Every structure is written in structure tokens, then in C-alpha cells.
Image (tube, rainbow over all chains, first blue to last red):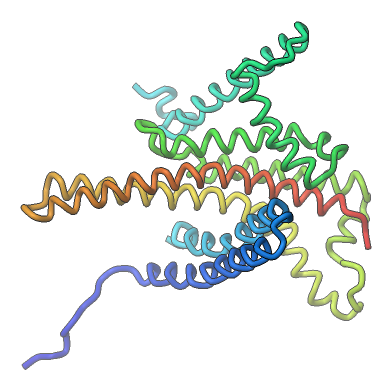
Length: 76
Length: 247
């Protein structure tokens, strides 16, 4: 009996690359938002300022995931 | 018929959407400035609905982005660029969820790249105007670092300030819009497949994917606004960092 080929997956390994590229920024954005929520709970009157900083932090962190999304277009 | 077919100026769908949005933004701004001028001349203190809409939108960029980050004087100095960037990006993003246009015209790298290059030259101009050559010295050799560490710090600063900033600015906008477009395409083509090609019970999945598509359309509306906001905010912050005094 031939058991050398029980399961086969076809496709491009780059897909896994994007999945990995999304892990880090996912954790990062989560940390940024959770800390902002914590700070707003402590100092509600600073909410507007903290939110602007939060968007900046999210934008910087998110760029990493988006570079991951862009690599297949560049190396295709 | 395709306009300018065969030449480098051949009109494709995204180019057509860009021209449409540019025309729309121009018309809205002309109408707004006309309304403002008329209200000012007639000493009309209660704004009309259209005028109020203009005041709220323009003041959002002026008060909560430019003045908040740069202060009144410098904020007003760079306001024309910031307003242009915000409204162009917003207009081009919103086409991603308008039926029959269906793609954000910022989903091709060209337009975000032009805006990012404009932002790049503006913050270098702001820094050089204020500090002269000292701007490059400040940003490449930050004060308070031991001299030996400059071997490590200077290449990192060069990469992050002068190379990665415009690239990430353009890439962030483009990739967000591409991802959103792909998500919507996936949802609605799955709906089409389930409703028309699937057998029996699987047709019910179509309702689920259609609901997802609808929810993501709302989400894309949020993303369109957010990306315009983030692009403008980052440009403002880069200008602010270039203007900051040396420590």
C-alpha cells in the first residue's frame, strides 16, 4: 500500500508569509488600543489627546502588516 | 470607445474615477467659497445648511489637526497643503463603496505616491527653512547620544526619516484600500456564487455572505475617513517634528 501521499496542499508559500506578517502588528495594535482605553479610564478629560496619539501609534504599527501585504506585488 | 487609446494617457476605470472625483471636489470647493464670500458680504450671521457643512469640514482639518499639532501660526501656514491632502484622499477613498464605481481610486500606488512626495518635500522644506543645514544635523545626529553610538543611530535615523517615511505613507493608504476592495469583492462574489451556482441548502450561505458584505461596506466607510485622517495627521506630525527646536 502506498502511503507516501496522504494529504497534499497546493498553493503559494507566500500566503503563509502574509499570515505571519499580520501576527506582530495584530498584537501591537491590540497593546496600543488597550493601553489607551486604560489611560482614558484613568483620565477621561484627556480622551481627545490620547485618541490622536492612539491613531498615530496604530498607523505606525499597522504599516508593518501592510508591508507584508505589499511584498507579493513587488516580488511576484 | 476609450479616450486616448494606444497612448500612455489611455483612460482606464481608476483614471476615470480620479478625474470624476477631482471635478467633484473642485465644484464643491468653488460653491463653498462662493457661499462664504456671499455670507461675509451680506453680514449673514446665521449660516445656511450648505455653509455649515463647509465650515464643519474645513474647521475639522484646521482646528483639530493643524492647530492642535502645529499651533495657530504654523498651522495656518501649512493649511492649504493639509486641506488639499485631506479632501483629495477622502474623496478618492470614498469611491470604494459607491455602487457602480466600486473601487477606491487610491488603490493604485500613483496618487498616494504623489501626495506622499508632496508631504516629504514639505517637511524637508519646513525644517530647512527654520534650521537651515542644522535640520539634517539634528535629524541625523540627535543630541544627547554618545559620539560612538552615531555609527548605529545615524543609519537608522537616515532610513526611518528620509527613506521609510514617504514609502510607508504611500503604502499604508494604498494597501488599506486594496485590502478593503479585495474583502468586498470576496464577499459579493461569494454571494453571487452561492445564490446562482450552488445547490439546495448551500443557497442559504448566500444570505450570510451578503450580510458580511454589507457590514464590511460600512467598515470601509470608516476606513476611508480614517485613512484620510491618518494621512493628514502624519503629514502634520512630520512637519511638526521638522519644526521642533533642538534640545
